[in-house]
Length: 226
Image (tube, rainbow, N blue to C red; front, side, top):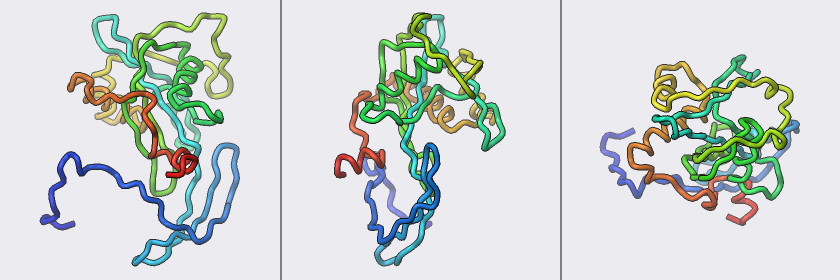
């Protein structure tokens, strides 16, 4: 990395979405949620390389913000994550596994199912690739405000790792401190909480519409011919 590299302006700081040609693809494993693939990728002057990666349907998370008690509070849930052997404090979240369901509506469904909450206002807070070196998961985090309870008769029956899942409200600034001091490790919680703190400091002027097209999502890009 050269110190003489040109300085990028704000308008230049944008990823370039450009899929490179694949000369061969093999399915190594088909699981219940995702598939492991091996692709032979043509990188032009750099030649061909083999990349093994996890094909993921994409997901959404929700930063539910309570603002009616004199301070901003974020809803956190605690869920067991077997691969890392940890009960993590997280944001409500879910897969994009319902065909044709818009992502923000998936977020509304997950908020109701995991937290028994509805929101009167939705905004797009952040989006990212979870682990782009080996996983196609694209994720959006939505900011949910003007919250109300789902009526008891309409509540979802939680099962498996969601059964008896603890929930708590945390001061947004205290949650940011927990992130920055290493007491919370979940990536979506990190990005959502710190994005909310940063956006709030700018008067929320970085928020975007919930129905904004999502070209960074690999499946949506492929479906739309991008």
